Image (tube, rainbow, N blue to C red):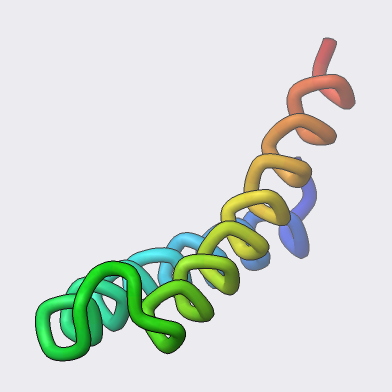
Length: 63
């Protein structure tokens, strides 16, 4: 895996962790089905998809 991909992976993992914390905090404050919580959940999903794409591409680059 290239240095750039490793860096991106690290950054995305950090973002995932922060988004999860934010979603939990907002969910506790506004409710799990609030518009704000759902928006953060969708943003988290997008970051997770990007992370999975990097992991998949690096896996196939090795294989």
